Length: 600
Image 1 (cartoon, helix red, strand yellow):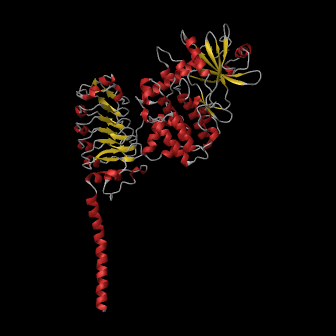
Image 2: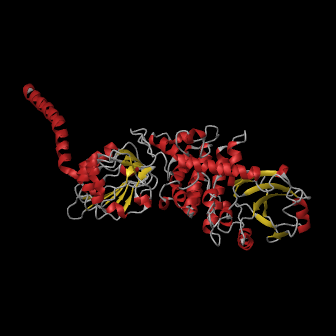
Image 3: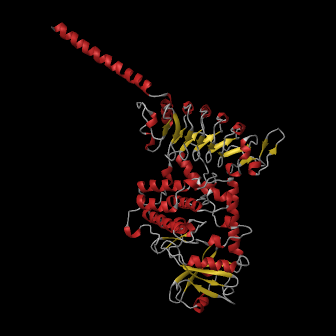
C-alpha cells in the first residue's frame, strides 16, 4: 500500500513537472501558430516603440487576429495587412525595419508623432505601397534610395523632419507619384530633374537650406569636380542619434540665418522709425492743426471735438507709452480723469483716406470683452490718430518679461483663455471675419484685473502697401510666424492659430519666442520644444518661477499648443475649437463666462 501511494505520489510529481515544461512549450507553439507573419512584424514594430498613448496597448502577441487591432486594416479575403494608420498618437521611438515584411501594405500613415531615427530602407520591400505619410516626426538620416522600388507609390510625404543628404534620383522613377513633399528638412544638393520629380512645385521642396534646382529657382553651382551644390553650401546639418535627432525647426521655411536677418532688419527698421520718424519726438500739434476732424463711434467719446483736439496738441514724447510696426502710442488723459491710448499712424499713399475710413468704421463697430475697444479717430492731413481704451495692466509682453513680480498659474490660464476668445471672435463671429496677422504678447493687453484683450486687429490690412507688400514682414513678428506664411506672405486663420500656439508656449515657459538661448542654437521656442520632446523632457518648458502649476492642465495646454504649431496648417485646430477645448478640459466651467459669439 505504501509502495502504491509512493507510486501515485511520484506519478503526480512527474505529471506536475511535465506540465511545467509542456505548458510553456504548448503556449509557445500555440502562439507561433496563432499569430500571422504580418502580426509578428507588427509586434516587432510595437516593441521598438518607447512611448505612446493607449493606441498600442491592445496589440497582444497572443491575439490570433491582428486585423482587429487599432490602426490596422486587412484585406477581407486574404487577411493580410493593407493599412497601418497611427497618426497623432504621440508615438515615440524608431520605426522598425520589420515593417518591410508587410508585403501587401498599401498605406503607411505614421505622421504627426514623435518617431526618430532613420526611415527603414526595408520599406522598399513593400512593393504594393501606394502612400507613405511620415511628415511631422523627428526622423533623421538619408532618404532611402530603396523607396524608388515602390513603382505603385502615388503619395510620399516626409516633410517636417530632420532628414539630410541628397534626394535620391531613384525617386524620379516613381511615375505614379501624384503628391510629393520633402519640405522643412535639411536636404542638400540638386533636386533630380530626370523623371517625375521635375513636375512638382516649389512647395514640395521649401525649407531645405541647401537644395538647388529649377523647381525652387535656385541655381546649382559646379565646383569643378563634376558635383553640383548651392551657392553657399553648409554641412553638418544632421544631428543624428536617438536623442539629438529632433526636428529642430518645425517653423523653419528657409535658413536660420535668413530668418535672423529678417528679424534684425525689422528690429533695426522699427528702431530707426521710432528714432527718426516724422515728428515722433515732437508735439502732435502739427498733426492736429489745419483741417483736423474727430470721428467718434457710437457715442463712445463723451467729449467735444474741440476738447479732444486741445488735449492732442499737448501730447509729446513724454507721453509715449509704446511703439511698434504700426506706429507710436501715446497716453491721453482727459480733464475728467479718463484715460485713453492714442496710436499715431503716418499716412502712406494717395487714396489712403477713403479706404482707411471705411475699414475703421468696421473696426469701430466690433465690440467684445476680450478685444481692445476702438472709440474713434482723429483725421489729420499728415496722420491718423486712433483712440483706444487705455488698459492699466500694460501688455502681456511686459507682464511676462519685464515686471519683477511673476504671474501665477491661474493668471496665465485666464490670459490664455481671454486671448483665445478674442481671436476666436475675430475669426468666427465678425462680419467680415478678420485675420489678425500679428498675434504676439505685445499685442495682448491687460486691464487692471489682468483680463486679456487682443489689440491691433485689422491694422495689418489697413497698412498693407500694395506695391511692396511690406506687411508680410511688418505684420508678422519673427518667432511667431507660421512657416507657410513666411514663404508665401499669405495670411489665413491657420497662420493666426500658429501664432497663438507660439503665444501659449511663451506664457507657459516665460520665455520669448526668440530667447537668446534658442537663437544661439539655431532654434526658436517651437524648435526648443521639439528638442525637449525627443528627450521626453517636455515638462521642462514650464516657467520655474510660476507658482501653482497644475500638472494636468499643463499637459492639456501643452498638447493644445503643439497642435496649434503644427507645420501642416490643416492639422491645426480652429480658434473656435481651441476655446472649446480650453473651456471643457482646462478651465472650470462657468455658465456666465462661456464662449459666446454675442459677448459684448
